[in-house]
Image (cartoon, rainbow, N blue to C red):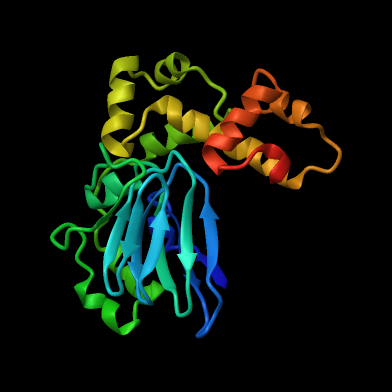
Length: 248
């Protein structure tokens, strides 16, 4: 399996986290690849063989089709067979709505074919495996309008600075938005609550610490990540990754 991440044009960085690709060779053995929530949403182009994806539901990503994945709140498994080739566009929170006018309310943990009228990549030859990062950059750069995404990125930046450990009422107050408007903003643009985004950011912080730990105990990691105790940490890690901390 070959996995790669590539940064977009500088002008697209307020909207995109990266482009990514995952591919396997001819006659490669079937493998399962698990992805955990990361507060981003993706558009996936399948230029290889059909691919099965499962979270709470099962999905089939067909060759030559383009898919939109909503914000994830649980882990997702992809079955990689021989000649798999997926190309992804990973959008920052609020990036998809700001750049493509695609709002994700009701789309959390779902995968759906992208409407061609909304996201038309027919010119990118998806059926001939000729999609290039350069063509994606040019297409998406042409969609940039005078929309102020900086305010949204500042909100997400605050959540990241606190590793998710910030009360929603303080977050809303600090950004001069009522708490009710704040929740509507997240539900409309991201399809999840602001609290869920904070929980995922906190999980990601703890997840990385557990994966890279040397001598720290899980209890120490729980406290430094803002969890009440070892049990609280374990429940969140298992919810988002499908495994207890001891198995990571």
